[in-house]
Length: 455
Image 1 (cartoon, rainbow, N blue to C red):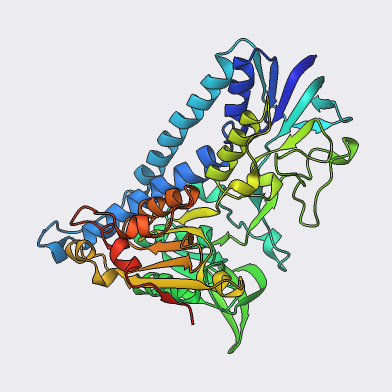
Image 2: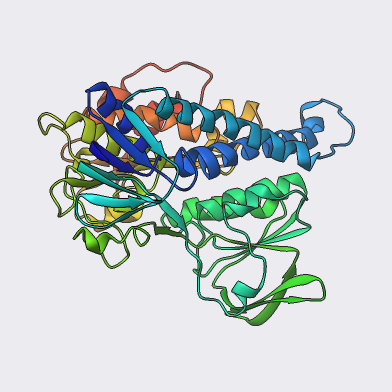
């Protein structure tokens, strides 16, 4: 079979690109032997944020008396919690499948694709040729080389979603955003939770003050966090999973019912025989691409997590937008994109651009302003005062360099700064704006009024 275009992977770049190319009259093959819709829909954003919502309801129900509301005891129906996220995932998954099967010139192959040469792939028993090929195979959980780990029934971000009973004690290896989100979810649902983090700071990509706030929030909820913890061995013993950990204070054995491995992501570039197509990858396995997401082979592109240019649903979808916009004439490029993301512990963290550490290292003249959430009336009224706003501005251009809004609504509020960064507007636009009271966003102009040179 010959097609105008072949898309390998049905993630947040792959399936909209298939529709776009089909609308232009191209014949399109799209192949995926895993989850149709990719990580976000099936085992990432959709199920985890659904669980975050259930966990927050449980948390707020326990706090009801703080607001003068008497509810009685709070019980968790874990089976219903898990079924709710599966029902939502099913709806999203079916939507993607429908989008890919309702068009006559899109053929969906539910098998993995491997290259035979630069224009030909093997999909099951069939050989497919295409003029243009787009790779959107995403990433998977990194499994560290820990003695005994393969002999225990460890969990990943995928398998944890299939649990049918609530873990008595969940041990999480890794203190990044995936580990922290699951830690808070399962603690709020009733599990004992311990986090083992190799570095001295959880959320190592964030400034130390932001990481410290996150740690304080999680520990207050009863989550134990051990930093500078090197996991040396894992074994089943006495009906428990025992994790031997070396810390600065010596060696400790942490015993639990379940172990979740959340130590990073590995690109799915090693499953397609890319060498037969001549496509190059970097030392970490990410497919190398140019500013238009084209690989070193001119008719092959790589989009989404597999190219190492972004690790989120929104960056994957933006990869689609870039490729789609450039089908006729190159007009968009990856380097026009501002790095931005959210961390969905409660309260959430929204970030764009540089943090304070990066700003200090940039060599620029930088202005910085901060405001604790405890100073904001809206946060006090809702009794959610954890967090901090931090804004960084270039002193010479007066344009935003970056911001972190960690606290109630932070993942939404940060967008007002994101938009001004894309507009290349000076911070004075926001400084002089009138925001609605009472909101958290109204304090952004007030925060900017306190900008001072970064010392």
